[in-house]
Length: 194
Image (cartoon, rainbow, N blue to C red; front, side):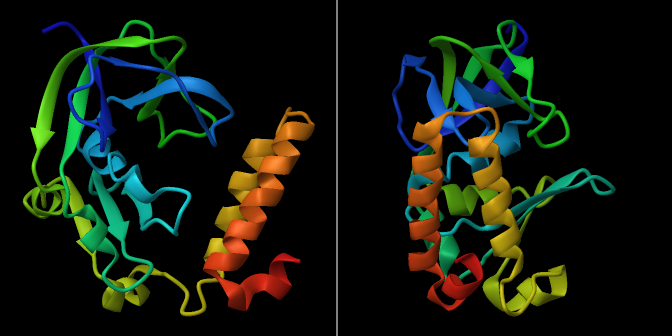
């Protein structure tokens, strides 16, 4: 097969991918050079509705880590997803926002070359210990997550600033909507956000 990149989705049986707006400023098809990253990126089932697990890349181990931020968060992963193979030629690195060059994007619709269906995302991720580590909520403090979740405030504002960078009034309205979502998810942080 030609040189490919991977895109994870909770929608199966797609024949082409259409560009979507993302926090990375722009309407693109987003993908990655790393298969396992596409697999857990398919978790975006609930993105925007509630807080997502902490995701980070551990360079020394060449492994990804997902850390639960609320109890039983990985229950949302117990559903089918797909990984789509796409021609890598139209994709360019996302240097300013990507996972150290692991994320790429392309303009316009992208034809699907192949699809891998995964019946249960959570079980698949558990079976891939050499590529990804899943950290339960009760163990999150061992991995540097502050007990008061104050790191989420910085993360929230970093994403909000990405949305604003070089953008017009409509994006300011999106950030204001995001602030309201954040305050609903973390009411204890409302005064800090205001």
